[in-house]
Length: 97
Image 1 (cartoon, rainbow, N blue to C red):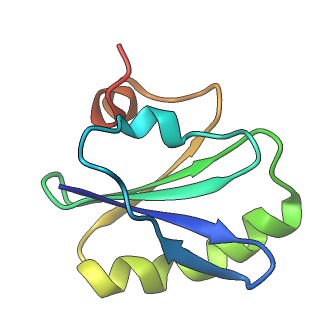
Image 2: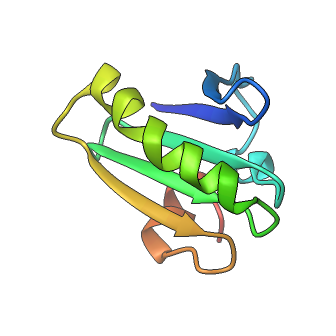
């Protein structure tokens, strides 16, 4: 199961997204957003940053990600993924071909 959070730039906090069962995760990607994908199966936090996000958003993201990870498991690895530079493992996790 994958849990997804979106950075709320105004509130400077992450909000958990409610995802409908049949919605593919790749449809959540938006160039203006920063999303966290908590992958319990692989013990990983994927930190995806859209290309239109600001330096300020990325700074806030960097400050908040460890606390989100720690809510799930402090042993989870954090991996940053920039839009356009997604790894094969990330693409598989979100359902991209």
